[in-house]
Image (cartoon, rainbow, N blue to C red):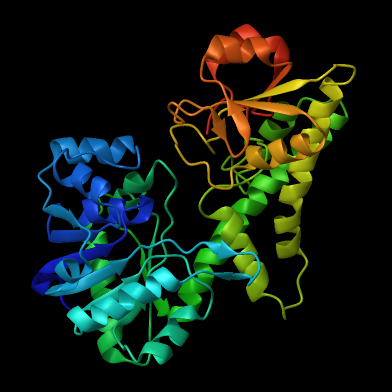
Length: 406
């Protein structure tokens, strides 16, 4: 596979990873993306609008000349493709201690049927050792793995300005090494940032990079959350401590704003998967990164309960279920863990979440999207991230957001 000979590119999945990748490459190449839902496909094809509420992607869809179509027909997408990028979801199964990779395997099976010569690049997050085992299981020798390092709501930006591009391959197969180099070059040419490092390495090493990188970031989140817990319990100014710590250039100020815990698409599942992969490896830190997230949520809930002391039939208002600003993602958001702890103590929960349009309940909790009424009925309002609209209820607000960002 040489970049100058690449014709059709197929992308399986139009979540954050798949859609941002499809938009990135469709500026210069014909891209056909697959989607399971016809309504989402129509939204992209007819309305030129993103189904994941990503403002960056919305802007590209509206203003750029993209060679992008979306279909629900896998045969249509993969037939004639030179390159297939797999970006289907791989949720973590807490019972099997393993990612559910069935969606990836379904795509690979279809590509082997409709485009047997296509190079397949897995972008989905997978367990360490998975690519090698999949190649052995399917007999397909055209599979590469390339980890993604995209921030939610900044996915397209991170593809346009990547810090590094990593492609995993069979280092003993010259043909596949060349294919990996070509794919790395394809992403580099599509980026706007100059001099992006491209690392070609073994499949398993590339898989490990992804899990260890996200676990390190989760560790940073947890570290500053524990710093914040210490400051809160000792009556100290957490922000002043963090500022002093982070001015050390070796530490820096990334991922340092306290929260109710890490959550979202990647950190919870990636840390648990890495812990499972390390079952036979002497370690304590990775287990601690997983366990401390629950400790943080328990602490937050206990602090809220203190504020409710003496109140009869208390009501806790939850301001936003989303993980961060400019996001519509609820998946494994830390505030939901706090909600569960409070509900187990008999506390009534009411949710304010504008993305839950015309819904009166969410997972058994009542929803009130009249902001004034929501604030009035809440004895305490908890917010993972502060918003100026909460100023009228400042006396009821509990948040650990020190910087009013992220």
